[in-house]
Length: 462
Image 1: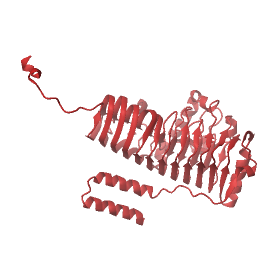
Image 2 (image 1 turned 90 degrees about the vertical axis):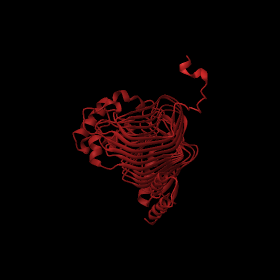
Image 3 (image 1 turned 180 degrees about the vertical axis):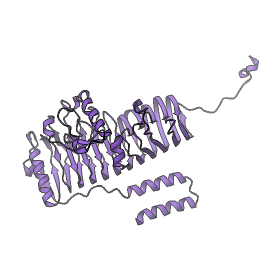
Image 4 (image 1 turned 90 degrees about the horizontal axis):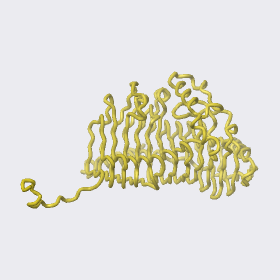
């Protein structure tokens, strides 16, 4: 509390003394007050080798019993630092965390999960595309835990290409039923899916947990979203590496989550790099817990979209900082805000600073009409207070800046400053907006000093 007061006082003194950029001072003060609350997990001192529980890194032996045994003992003894040395560890089923555990995957260590769906039963409490339900267990899962971490230079291989990755074409029945149960407010304990519904589980999910660190590991071949942080808080995701290009392999999906730092990550995903969500429709409104206080910095984006807010965001998204990020390859869209009149909620206090992109389809795209859904509904989203500064892009083949509000809820109070795009199909496209400011922006090239007129240029001489 004292530290937060000091930060506020120093910022206030900056305003009084005539700071050159009071808006930047306020943004930095707000960001730093959030950073002061993020500590992640504490690593337990007690260290165990997973091989002492019977695991063998030969790629043949089923090591799930060894991980289960280690977690059970850690629960009884107050926690542990479980070390996985180099080798390939086959897992016929999920790892279920307990509190106060650090799982360290040393360089050369590979957790390779079995692809057969039956290994991920019985059902567990989870969420699927913003709806709470029971489904197949995520491959690494924790529910209502504290002080948990996964660290090291090893690999988490979901190995899901032959089964789960093929399910999207069969998921419609389960997907629609989950949404109907959401809209009809069916009790969550009656929302049982799993076999026959083809709703893919996440690779890593921590649900209703706090004090989490995920650092260093390499992630590949996820069955669905790679990391799903659901109703959790005080989290550090740092130095992760991805090559996850199966279907819907989002990198990190925070949902109903607060106080999260994402930094120094090399994304390479078959879908969104970071997708900030907050519940679908009735489940979001009932939960009424926004995703908030999220800092994304010093990352390299590569994949479908860099940072996405929505479309499941009915409880609201606020206080998101995207700073000092660049690109490792192509992104369809750099920053993408998406909602529609099914959702309600709000998206506000979004700050994008000092980011560089190469070639994209759209650099910055905010829409309240995502996928054309819900246009007959009345749950319009408030999208406002967005600040984009010092952003560059080599080429936006479709459009540089797009804002699409609705007549009922225009997008408002958006500022673009020092946004420079070398080539753009369309420089800007704004509809149903209010109070939009552009300062020192070049969209689609630069116009230099005008040439001096000569007599032959005079139209009256022609």
